[in-house]
Length: 333
Ligand SMILES: Nc1ncnc2c1ncn2[C@@H]1O[C@H](COP(=O)(O)OP(=O)(O)OP(=O)(O)O)[C@@H](O)[C@H]1O
Image 1: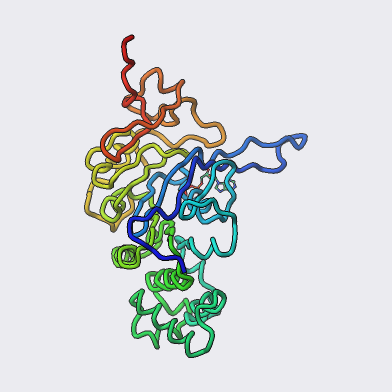
Image 2 (image 1 turned 90 degrees about the horizontal axis):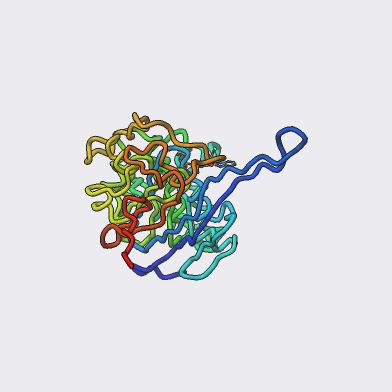
């Protein structure tokens, strides 16, 4: 088993791009233009730290998650685990686990909780005898606070609440002893009253077990509350990243400001942010705007924004943005 040491860089994406191309389409079988779902994204996840990725629906968050989990191969760029390039091996899939939005869809309705947790334990050789399996299933249920464990292990998915099902999905991910957990909108389908409990469980696992956790959400208010670092995505690109407090208290990019203005109460995690804004809709990823992709919606756009792609600029310590407002003034010769 790989040791998890707090602060270690666990999972890294280097300039990762994903274009989805329909194999045939249109008249005369011409190729359709690709969907540029993710463009040149670089990030790293650290043991024991929570990184949130925020952005509107369709901006490419789930695609980044699937690239990191190696469910999709990247069109360009690479994924590194503990600094080493990785292939789509079974061992990689074990080390980087995902928790999805809909816990009901991810559990087989005909199998009891015990089956869902025993299967990965047996497949990966963590438990061999029936007694070992029972013991470890019970330990997993304890870790996700589904107690009394004897009752929960014999329940079918439909006998559980949404929050309890999500806890089973989390326990199943933990069964294979991953080093990184990617949680894609893990609470957005859950009842408002139980969201906080599931987020607290994820936080506890990240802290106490030194898991590298990527929390994907469209709700920047919950990211502010829950994460150490925030990555903001817009139309397939990362446009701001930094410590959660800095990004939310002193946002650099006009899009981050827009997201925050749609999430009025900084401390709430119980309601999703209002995704509609007065500033228009996200662009098509088939033919994204030239220059900065945000420029058609940007309240402070300048002429250069429609022609030139902004590069990454440092705003403060560990805080970066891709915005022409932060371009260095040219140095006089
Ligand atoms: N398998 C696929 N084939 C073609 N296009 C895809 C595929 N998966 C995603 N896309 C497109 O890529 C873009 C990004 O989608 P993605 O699901 O990653 O966004 P998201 O930010 O996670 O949105 P949501 O929160 O709604 O899931 C969208 O335009 C989507 O239609």
